[in-house]
Structure formats: structure tokens, C-alpha cells
Amino acid sequence: MLIYMIMIMIYMFIIGNMIFVSKSKHLLITLMSLEFIVLSMYFLMMFYLMMIMFNMYMLMIFLVLTVCEGALGLSILVSMIRTHGNDYFQSFNLI
Image (tube, rainbow, N blue to C red; front, side, top):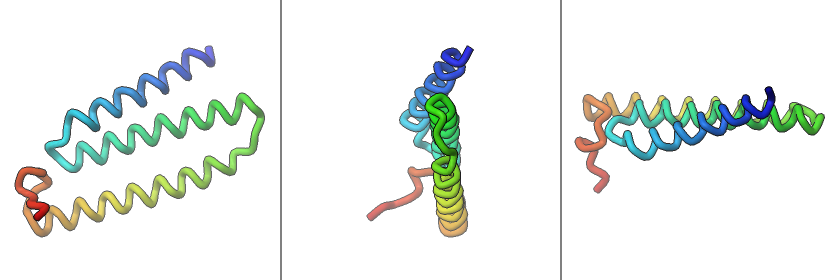
């Protein structure tokens, strides 16, 4: 049963990476795929730490960094929408 759950989490990670690579038109979809990848990594770390009977403090640090990453991504999204009016990467000039 545990091996099936780990395989599902690995499948989630692969699907999240495929969405991140293929759907780069909108910033919001990219941020959501990154959060999906982080969620699958969290579950994989949780299962691994439970299997080796280790402390779960690392998961708390991981969650804090994940929240910081999400807040930073949302602030970039809001500032991009305020300056350019949308979240398309084509209308955003990097030069």
C-alpha cells in the first residue's frame, strides 16, 4: 500500500514538471505547477521520514520555505498584473 502511494507522489512530481515546462504562457499556471511540485515533494519527504522513523522538524522548515516561495510568486504576479495588465509572458519585455 505504501509503495503505491509513493508511486502516486512520484507521478504527481513528473506531471507537475511536465506542466511547468509545457505551459509557460501564463505566470499563474506556472506558479500553480510549482506549488503542485512542492506538494508532491512534501508528501514524498513525509513518507520517507516516516519510513526511517526520523523527526518531522525538517518538514516544518520545508513548509516555511514553501510559504515564502508562494508569497514571493504571488507578489511578482500582482506587480506584473498592475504594470502590464495581464500575466502573459509575451507582453512582458525583459530588455
